[in-house]
Every structure is written in structure tokens, then in C-alpha cells.
Amino acid sequence: MSTNKTVSAKDLPQSLTKDLKVISSMKAIQRAGFWAFIVAILTPFAFILSSVGGGAYPTPEKTYLYLAFIVYLAIIGLRLNQLKGPIVAILIINIILGLGFLGGIFPLLLVIMSIIALVKSGPYYKWLRVDNRAKS
Image 1 (tube, rainbow, N blue to C red):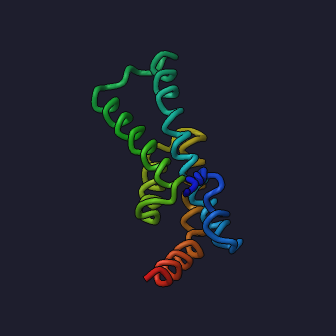
Image 2 (image 1 turned 60 degrees about the vertical axis):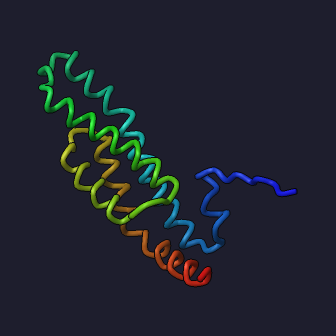
Image 3 (image 1 turned 45 degrees about the vertical axis):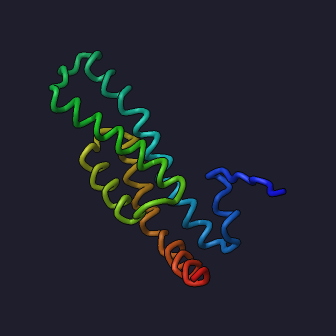
């Protein structure tokens, strides 16, 4: 009889390794994913409030751009939180997009957290290479 032990994203680093540098690296990447998801959730509210609160009504092109931005950040936020995908490329794209939409505190936090995760991702990738070699 096998037991299915599920691990939440919050407990993921401790379930994979005991190395504190690797855990710190994983948590920084997960934090960047969390902020990407938060920005994806809060962008529609900011978009609606700015247009209702006396701002200019958005053009259809701007609406589609924001919609694509929201969908991208929601998907990428979940992927980063699960430590899946090409993390370095995703973080660089997050920094570029965050700078492009830099008009509030949440895109600024997205940029800051993505830069921190990018800087701290080294131990995670080193651990990942060693772990994959051990499995081969």
C-alpha cells in the first residue's frame, strides 16, 4: 500500500533538499512567482479604477495588451511557484515587462523580486545539475 504524500509549494524546498543556500534560492524564485501572480490579480482592478476614476478610456489595443500581460503573469507566477520551466528566461522577461508597465508599486515589486530571484538562482541551478547527474 503506497501513500500519496502531497507537498505544497510552500514546503517544496524543504522536501527536496536540506542545503540552506538552495532553499533560500528556491524561496526567492517562489517569491518572484508569488509577486507575478499578485500583479496579475491586481492589474485588472488598477485598470478599471483608472478608467472609472476619470482616466482616459482604454483603447482596444491597450485592453488586449493588459489582458495578455495578466494571463502571462498568472501562468508564469504559478510556474515559478512550482519551480518549473526556464526560470532565468522567465525572470528576465518579468523584469522587462515590469519595467514596461512600471506605473505603480506592484510592478516595481515584481521587478525587485525578479532581480533578487535572478541573483539568488545560482545555488538552485547548481543543485539541480548535481541532482540530475546523480539520477542518471
